[in-house]
Length: 448
Image (cartoon, rainbow, N blue to C red; front, side):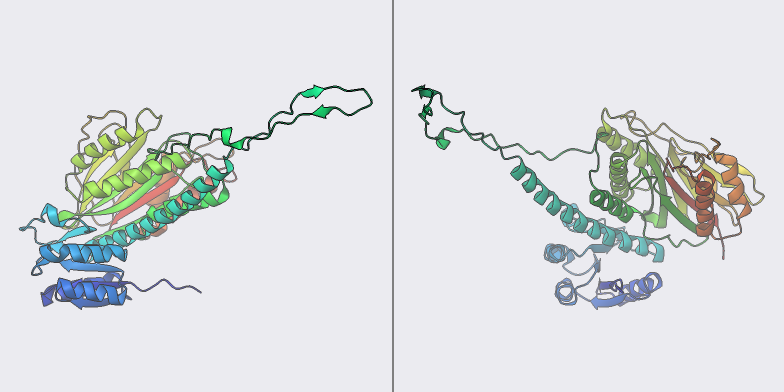
């Protein structure tokens, strides 16, 4: 039985309190983690090479950090080891020292949840790079095979004319011209260009490729649920086919904020899945740059619009930002809605604040009215695949059934409610084929 390799984290800081604090937070998130410590950048380089670490967390205030960062980042990149840097907000990181750093964490707002998500995401990123590298190798082999198969078999020259007929009883005498292979002009080499983003015509040709695509998409999903004081958060996503166009994620932000995103792309097959993979990558970059969620989604719209071009796709997205200190939720929605259930079961529908993504480039998508999530209240985010589940008699599962099930199970943990809802809507549609992806995220106000 294969066991998951232990997480090995190297903490580099010349401040003992930082080493102790980060080590303690690591133990809370990853109890089995192996932690080593360095007091200088040079020592970190040496230990990272000797101990085969999974991740390095470095303090930007280390003496000569900026000068020695290039050597550290190059050493780690050769080993495919991500680098997380803790910095002081008062001393903004300089652009010339950002290369090779996987992510930045603000010293004043770092906590267990933030660190857990940061480490999970950078490790996931490294794994994705390895998968992509493997895919590129497979594509290279496939390309060589295709080029070999495309080699033109030169047909033999037609038989020459009979030079002279002697008598009927005699066989004809042939004058055969010798073959002149040097006169055959080679075919021009095919010009191979790197394709742009996938289009609606993209297909997966084999079971192995389908499984590979599904594994890549599974790896893009969150590895677990974030730990946020006062909130119980859980999510799941089930695809109707091998791959799907649904997506959800948890994004740590500055000021100790957490963003929850859920989205879906119309269509079936690999194309919408790849659009959502691009959306996820864009979101992670944008969320690391600002806490203004309206600005994030508006800029995201410009990027998605450029990717989609003239393709016939609709992309919807909802972004919730949670502040655990004030229990406030701010949200932006591009074509989706959510449901807020109070302690008495009353439902407040949080409507879309703007049009879906990809329709118009210069669209500003504003925030909705901020909400509080008090103890016992539930925020339900679900793709429309839940409501659209259709029974054999042609009846849809619908919004009312969905909300009723959540209300009836509101005393249970979020992950159990999400699984109950997933099971209920799929059993409702059984034995019909599931035509839509199902994605559910539930956030409960919870002081336990």
